[in-house]
Length: 438
Image (tube, rainbow, N blue to C red):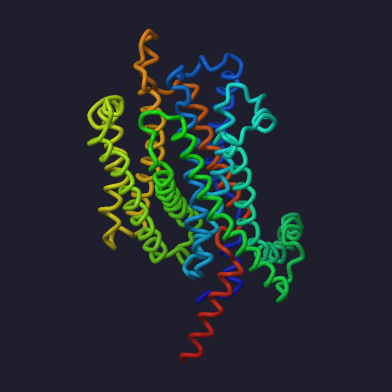
């Protein structure tokens, strides 16, 4: 049982060590290379990419969909666990909140990167059409960013007040900023009541907004009326896939944070077991919708759709399709249904497989469908019949992923990774219960 001072010392933000500095520098270098590639793309145009008339979305949109999916962890983990009052959630929710905010911010940036003329972004607002899902995306993404920020910030207010006192002598500048962010928090009954209600409202709001965001993302595809996207299953398919992607990202980040910041006393095997149970449920749900998405059309497919499915099952995209399905869904299910598979190290490996599978899954959804239009591709250069990202596309895409990791890293540098006030309260409650039983 740890004392209040020990908990504050363990969970208070600390400066980066040598490994942390190398990590930051590496991310900055990757981002800089991506910026150089993007500037060159702006100057020369989309000709530096391998996107052509058919593969006109390419890796940028698949990366955008991945970020949107990953951000769903704020709805499925943070809000639901907060509203259901699960006490074991405490070490996990802030990590999930940070992932959500970083992912949805990068989703907004990624969609702008895809625009060949970002100077025309304002036209999405000036000439918006309500019948277009793109307009709904423009509305819902900023809304989700705001709600995600509030969901992260509100629970931090008591912690900021604690950090104000903790850094008062050692780091007065930090103390000053934490004091401003704490909004004069004193922990009074009135403040506690208002804060609890505010968190509950925001946690409730993010669930429907998250579902709407995933559904609109799916409608962007299904309303284009293309082989492979022309499905009424797309909304549920995207939501269940986001459930998997978000939890996979959470597992990976939780494991790394636990190791780097030595939080084994706070993030225990119990937490990995709980997330593992959620992840296996998510994978089973997503596998079910995958069966609906691919198996049923295989029996009833039109000629165009049959060509598309063959390219996935046994053609050009087959190795990637089966690797994603087996490695990103079936193997995680087979491992996680056993308790030993829900230990930290197996969970981390499975989390990495799930995240990689989730990213490449979006790549398959986007590119394979675009290269199978209803009208046959003819009278065009041979290179237009195939697509694989150019060096520019890879540099820019990897830079966006690095930027998301940089946002997460910086937030973990200045914010307590685990809620200090709540952890102290839980420890005191356990101590009281122990005294009563003895």
